[in-house]
Length: 185
Image (cartoon, rainbow, N blue to C red; front, side, top):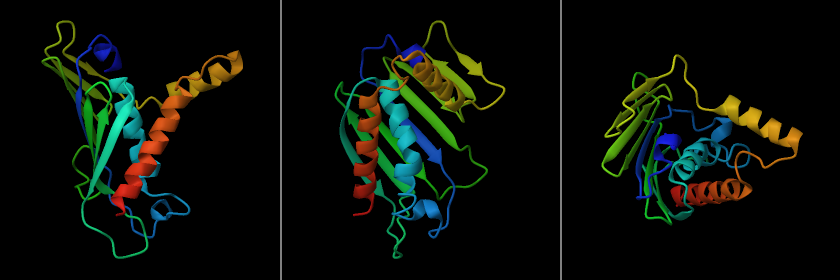
């Protein structure tokens, strides 16, 4: 997706749907002191992916949470996080724990310049409107963790720049914390 979008200068509209699955309110990841909640612990990766695909700093963040929990647990796992970017792009991250297990877990769609890219479960990428691309299928799901870890270790060994700029890491962390705070209001 990043390679196909590299030469696109128009703003991008991104829709991410994450069928995260339910986790009990007393699970460690829902504890504010231990796990920080699912936005900080999991949805942050989709904020990072949106930033990576857009390639422009995050300018705004809004959150709409579905219902409120009466317990002391966070339960910020049914939210829509909407990000605005400095270049005019936006991303809507639907992070939902109230779906069915039979439905695909992750779908990313990017609309830009009269074209569309759709990635299902990090296995099947389809494109509409691209002259040199229509689809790509992977035999296994690949979310990039192995390549990222290898790039990081290689950068440390060589003393070169890490694969993810520090400014991006801080920006995503700040945005995830801000989004989690908004979800709890």
